[in-house]
Image (cartoon, rainbow, N blue to C red; front, top):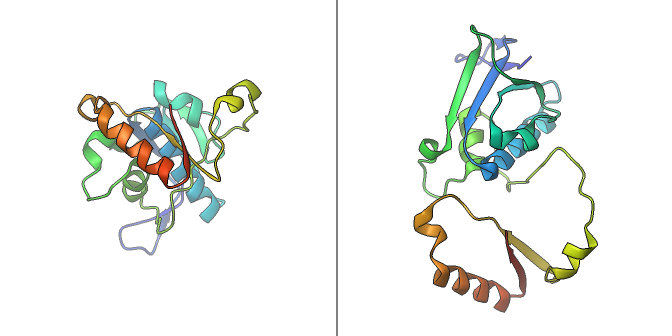
Length: 168
């Protein structure tokens, strides 16, 4: 069950709140990370998540979820549509999800996925090894994804500052 304060901040509700989050795999990582932040802050907090194709790998086995699938008819559902939620300057999926769920995040965005990574030595051998490395994940916005000159300029700038850069 999810324990969250009511509007007056005095009572707590034990009704399971379902999260219906629409977005991409990138947004699924952000949601997974926000749920982990909530769980680390309050180990008793649990969520339920409406099944979404892009979210299954990142959230189906998440320790903060009590259920993943289809909510009952009388469920309380919090809807998050990331194409519409990011309204503040400098907003990210992480910040937008956290704000919508009422989770305070005044620190860096610490990403989390609910599995352990196994090294693939063939892939690791191809990656640049610098003291600081950045993985750039493409979004779904055709207007920005096709700006190759901008990407090249960013990569050159980061490389000049000593970063290893990989675009996924």
